[in-house]
Image (cartoon, rainbow, N blue to C red; front, side, top):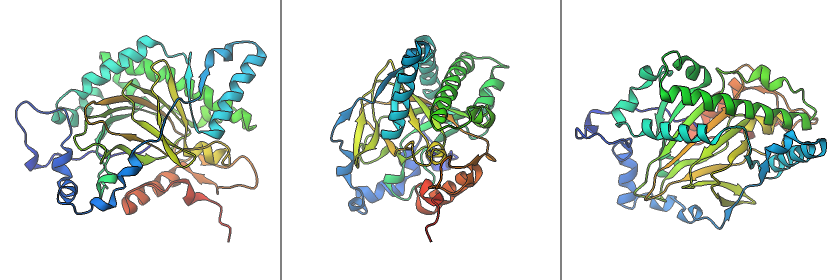
Length: 357
């Protein structure tokens, strides 16, 4: 889960009365773009690494089997566990979130992102979202490889609940989506934790509405694709992420040391393991590096749910000897923020390995 703080619009970024919906990437990051135009720094970018060897279909798991006979339930749980151990990513169908809700969510999401940029920058009060919910770009970027060509609304579940006090089509749709997908995340986390012999109430007690988030993403068409990422390579700083993406594609992940492209499946939701679950499982479940590549001609939309604990939650490996030292989510987030500020990218779990000295 990579966060991008919003920028205030600068005086020299005035545009016509027909305001563009796209954030002012080139104006704000002019220095980075100028270096590419004149050839300075171009050698720093390994363009070859942006071209994918192959497209993959993620393991597909039918969650309807969890309602079946005992051997069907156990087989389904086994598949969930194996995919989390081997790939860190899988997709699910018959997941309990209706096509109608997903379709309405995408429609409302597209509508809000089509608003003029200036309006989106100041829409928090109108929607009863926390200040800074709208984010775009990468403030810490020092080169184009660190810039994410994307914009997002990053909203805690409590903000979604509060916004329904003054209901809009967006707020009611977001609440339907968040309620369903949150329940799915908790059920999957319980299945994975029980496979490790971990108490099943752990996630219900630590991952609460004010700590979990829905993130609506838009990746505008990028004129200099593939020189810029939609979302730079990273791992997610949570337990689980659930993603609903459109048919455009662009999500890629590391498999056997190579980048592979995830084939979109409109019927499925994508699930991936986050850093906290890798630490909790003592490295059994894999938090895998992934990214979003840009598209020169088409924009891309996705909606993600992040299962996160409270900041004081202690993350302790459930097996001995422990690969990772015990840490709180607050410590982890602070270290990630420090590294991004210092290096321009997240270091993550390697910071929390048990010392071998």
